Amino acid sequence: MRNKEMLLIPGPTPVVDSIYDALASETRSHTDPRFVAIYRSAIEKTKEMLKTDGEVFVISGSGTLAMEMAVVNTVQAREKMLVISQGYFGDRFSKLAEAYGIEVDCIQSEWGKRVNPEDVEKTLADGSFKAVTITHADTSTGVSANLEALIPIIKKHGALVILDGVCATAAMEEDMSKTYGSPEAKIDIVLTGSQKAIGVPPGLAIVAFNQSALEVRKQIERVPAYYCDIYNWLPIMHDPGKYFATPPVNLIYAYDEGMRLVLEEGMEQRHKRHKALGKAVRGALAIYGMRALAEESDAAWTLSCILYPEGVNDSVFRSALAEKGVIVAGALAHLAGKAFRIGHMGNATEEMLEKAIVLIGETLNEMGLSVDPSEAAARFRELTYVQA
Picture 1 (tube, rainbow, N blue to C red):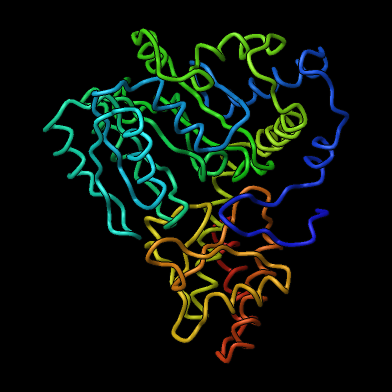
Picture 2 (picture 1 turned 90 degrees about the vertical axis):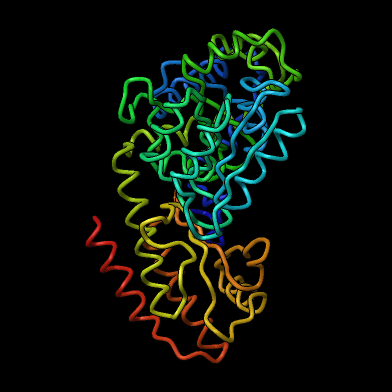
């Protein structure tokens, strides 16, 4: 990679040379047949990745826009939506829904823990909810959602499943054709962005609707949005040569190449790789007395929130590490200064992460702790090998 730093934050993530090359290709008209073919290819690759029987939307925007697009096309003002929150980004769904006059109930877990499925069952039984949002991997806590437990409960009560895959798509299983215990128990909507496990620069909002979710949109006379209304985008997704809003031409080039790499590796292999690297990173950092916020059984495969051992100053640590070329992120909310977050997804390699483990150890030693980087590196290799 031509990157000068190891960008190991929860996103954006490292970009490989072939994606940079695609991004730097000559800018063409958004109606040029050569660009239209690439846009169509990117859309079809997205459908293949998510295995949806419905429609996908790949448009200029962020993951937050994708969240809004998912909600505004399915839940109307004064209807009820349940938010399953396992961190900061789950909570954002509540604010988004309230902006549209949607009645929101939120089940929040303790940070670092999963929501109890029994609480979800009880809440859904007590009220008529149109949809339920789940954050697959919460970027603030490193906690993953238990889809096997949650989806059957949600579908039993007739609600749509809206899955926030921003920090999970292309790394953790999000198969929209999969059934969870019964034929109708499926993920209805997946939303994501380009800049995390897909490994493309930021700037694309990606949303997939299955046939059930499209039918819900069909029953809504009008939505309180223009850019976010999927009916304005459907003609473009079917024929990218048509116009609604100017697409980010070069970013679509990059995304198509990113999706090519995702599918070339294969979804099963990507899931296996991300799971192994996540476990190896957490296991190696534990050698330094650095504990992951989430229990291993609940941990996301894409990023980890790591608690500092006693005596580590957050800003000093991250600044010193950055001088060595490794960029990690600070923690959010009440964990700010007490933890850091490290991404291990997308194009991040085994070699890159092992080097980061060593440099983290060297930085801790410079700060007065006594740790063994070689032992941590050996632990990383051991866990990666065992999982491989």
